[in-house]
Image (cartoon, rainbow, N blue to C red; front, side, top):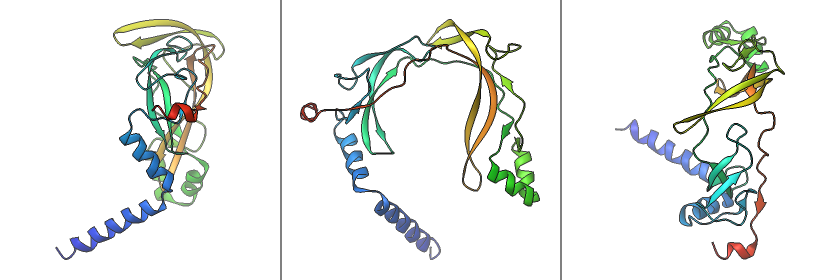
Length: 213
C-alpha cells in the first residue's frame, strides 16, 4: 500500500499537469460538443445550410469517394473547432489485398540502426528496411503497369460494384511508434479513380445561424 500511494499521487499530478497545458478553448470546445449536440462552427460544402443528421450528397460515385451521406460532427483537435462533414453512408470498402510489408523506416531510425546492433535487430524483426522496398501492387493492378487501366471492386453494404480506374504508383504511409512517433513508407501501384471526388472545404457558420443551434 505504501508503494501504491506515491504512484497514484504521481499519476494524478501528471493528469493535472497535462490539463493545465491545454489551452482554454480546448475545454470550451469539448464542453460545447458534449452539451450541445446541434452545435458546430464550420461546415463542408455538402452540409452548408443543413443541420446535424441531415441527408447530404458528396459529388462523385462510390469509387471516387462520393455518394449519399449524413451530416455528422467532429471536434477538430488542431484548432478546437466543431466541424460538420458529409459522411458517405454506407462507407465504401475496397479490399486491395496488398501485403502488410515490407516497409521502409525513416532516416532517423536507419541512422540509429547503423550505430546500434540492437536497433538494427529490431528493424529487421519488424520487417522494416533502410532502402526502398520493391513496388507492391493491389489485386486490381497485378501484372499491370502504372498508367494503364484497371477495374476496381467497391463494396457498399451487401452490394459489390465495379468501376473503371487507372493504376497509379504512389507512396503508401503507415504510422508506428519506435523511440517516438515514426512514419513508414513504401511504393505501391493501386487502382485509383481517374477523377477523385473534390476535397471537402470548410466554411465558418455565420453568427446568425449559431443563434439557432
